[in-house]
Image 1 (cartoon, one colour):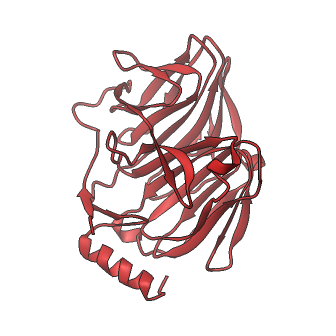
Image 2: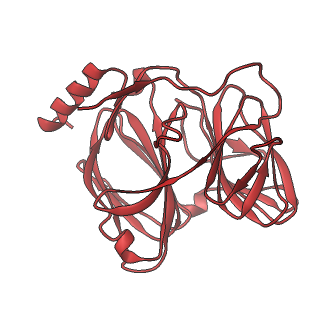
Image 3: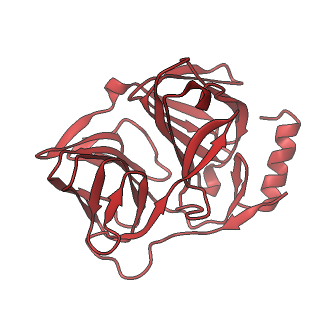
Amino acid sequence: MTIATSIQSPQTGAASMQRQVTQVVRGRPTSDGAGVKLTRIIGQPGLDMLDPFLLLDEFRSDQANDYIAGFPSHPHRGFETVTYMLAGRMRHGDNQGNSGLLTAGSVQWMTAGRGILHSEMPEQENGLMWGFQLWVNLPAKDKMTAPRYQDIAPERIPEVELAQGVSARVIAGSAGGVTGPVQADATAALYLDVRLAQDARTELAIPAGHNAFVYVYEGQATVGEGSHSELLRGELGVLGSGETVRIAAAKSAARMIVVAGRPFNEPVAKYGPFVMNTQQQIVQTIEDFRSGRF
């Protein structure tokens, strides 16, 4: 058994108003579940975690063999999973009798808490399946909370115009005077899906003290200034400290997710789908799972 224990936070040095990209990360091809092909951006050697974010995967394929086997029943404890669908249909269910359908534009924010067994299976046999899954840590005091779901239909996610040629779907947190439907009190999370027309630009407010990143999933964008400011499709920019970030799309239209959250600065013990604070808690979690106590 290998258990990784770490504390990570990139917010160092004196705070500045404008956030800049301090690190650029490209995802790595991998597979998960029953062989679903995906790209892992956070949770790989180039970026193990970004407190409180433990993992970020992008899944995108129009080849059914890349996703059709899905994610059969599997356990989680100690964190939250956030699934944001851009295209396709995914059915989820769990060992507590909950079930729901994720469609294009919808979000599921699942709090695993003290433990849950759930599955996520494609409800399509062809066509494009595209989206993201983000793992968000829970603080020590909330790791054994009761599991819950926030299933957010596409029409419940508000879209706001931030500037000429710039719009954002507000999933969590606030932008442009609009607040998203997701409740993420532990991290006070910000989660935006931002679209920029060519030559458009704007400045986004990001809570001071939050760790944050930008992931470009269409086109290319300029994020902040300096040597790491140009982000291509498939690149994640880790943002340094500050209260705002400037984004622009000079060479082509662009789409990106902008995500931020309050770091916990607590020890993190990870073992597969279990995220606790100590190795002893991981051992207890495995015993609980094997004994059917989830």
